[in-house]
Length: 189
Image (tube, rainbow, N blue to C red; front, top):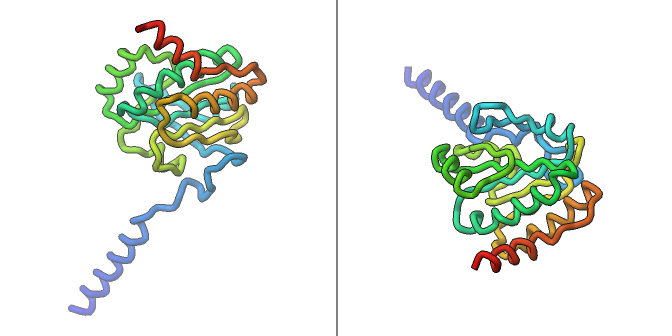
């Protein structure tokens, strides 16, 4: 009986260990030049956002973010990117790792004018194989990753460089979103 119990316990432990670290999404490494992962998420109204459907229409900028002080300061630059290139076909998607109610209030307060979704469990970070918040993925029409910009930069330099990549992708004149947002801040003072 002890042997049977020991064998069952060993099998249970081995099975548990096998599932402790699930394999990465489809085993593909997420990097520039590779195809973006299959990804679906519900927006605030419950509508399914399907990344492959979005990239069939045009380039997509996916921003994995939160409402922390750094991401909050950086948001204006990403809203400027969205405004500058949406008429050229860019689709922007912000995915927040916050509770729904907090994001709803934040979106209203910031007058967010782009697609957004909430992923409080962080599944998006697993699918996109990143632990850095925020991380931005520029994905070309068709689904190929053009740029990955990770980390928080409240100065706007990271957003400026990403804006230049977006301009190349949509074949448009680059907009200096860093300068644009800083000028808007000065006007408000």
